[in-house]
Image (cartoon, rainbow, N blue to C red; front, top):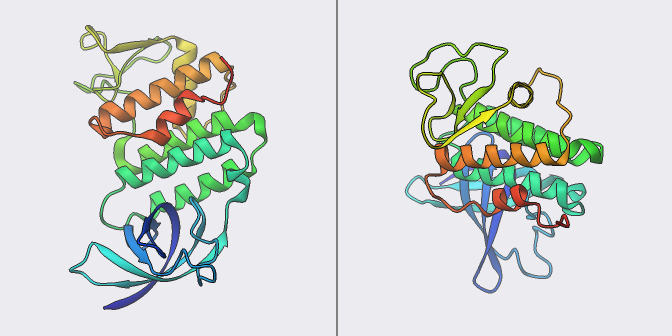
Length: 253
């Protein structure tokens, strides 16, 4: 049994028996791991309040190759992310990011996606309130892109033909991005205006200036991302955190 320490983010936790938790960790050096935190629910647990959703720290793990469930010996908290828990828009976007990382990260280590998730949580926690909506969209598109599922925006997702700039974009979530005129016929196509296409390109590309979206356009972009995720990655899987972020039920109709 090997003892390993690695930067980690808590993606979820389940009660195990009367006194323990099973935690799901995004780790920088080991990928996504599940671990048993023995005694985590005891009043004087060595874990204290560190095992909260999206908290970040250094996990001390005992690994055994023949087990799916490892042992969490300690968790040295570096950031509780309290600024996320007390703000619904921030928390919703952050929880959606955590769910995407949990469900779609590869089994092997993927430091780039861990670093992006960690940085995105910091951005969401500290950004001005008026920027949280657009930043959440950008970070979600960036995360799926880093995981290898960037939407095709310059070339047709089906046949690779160039997509001319300066035109509306025929976007297919099922195909994984934009379609050319020849391929972009039939059901399941969302035609993005030139302005909406420009906004999407700005959201996907990390070096672009953030677009300014009113609530109606932000809602359209949330639906587009969620549809892309479900068709292109989730394959019918339930994604409650993404659905909560997409629907924004705390906002009065």
